[in-house]
Image 1 (cartoon, rainbow, N blue to C red):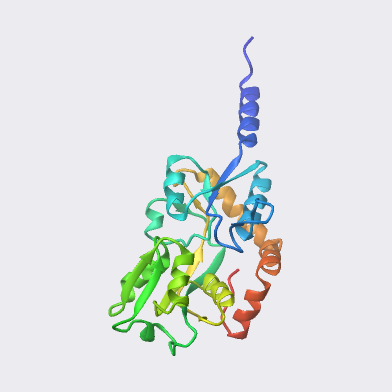
Image 2 (tube, rainbow, N blue to C red):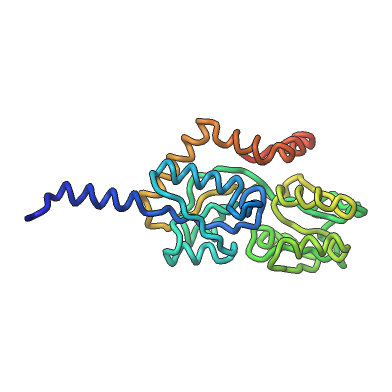
Length: 254
C-alpha cells in the first residue's frame, strides 16, 4: 500500500523534531559554561541552550569541546551550533553563520596588584610581557595593537592567570568577566582593569547553510529577551559582577 505523501512528511517532521539539539561549548568558563558539583553542565550558556532546545521541541545534548575545536566540530557536523561565549568576529564569520548578538562585552586586563598600570599605554611598554589565551579575541587584539611589549600565548586561562599572579606578566588581556572573576580569586596579587580595551558582541554560531535553524535561533533570542530571560540569568548568575560594573560606570552585558 502506498503511504500518502502528507503522512510521510509528518513522520519525517516528527523524527527530525525528536533528534537532539547538539550544542557545543567548552565547560571551563564559569559562570557561563562549567560543570557543577553534581557533574552536570551549568551556567548562563547552559540555561540558554536548554531554553532554545525547549523552544524547538528537541531534547538537548551538550558536547564539551575545547574552544579551539568548536568551529571544526560545527563544520564537520558533530554539533548543530555553538553557545560558548563566542565573540562574533569577521574572521570567524568566514567559517560560520552568526545569530543576532545576545550579549555585549569587552576586553579587560588582569594586572599585578602593585602595578601602576591604568591602560593599554602602560601595558605596551618595552620589557613588559603580556599574556593571552590562544585562539581568543584577546590574542587577536594584542597581536594587532601591542608594538613594544613581548607577547606570550598560552593554551589555558589558568596558566595565563598564574603569569600575572607570580609577577611574570604585566597583564593578561581577556574578556572583562573573566578578568573580574580572576581578580576576585587573587585579590592580594592582582587587580582588574575593566574599562574595555575593545567592545565585542557574543553570538550563537551555526553552519552557513543551516538557514532554518538560524532563523529559529534568532526568533528564540528575540522572544527570550522580551520575556525577561536574560534579566533572570544575570540576576541568577551575575549579580556580583553586575554590581561591580555599575560601581565603575561600565555598561553591563545583556
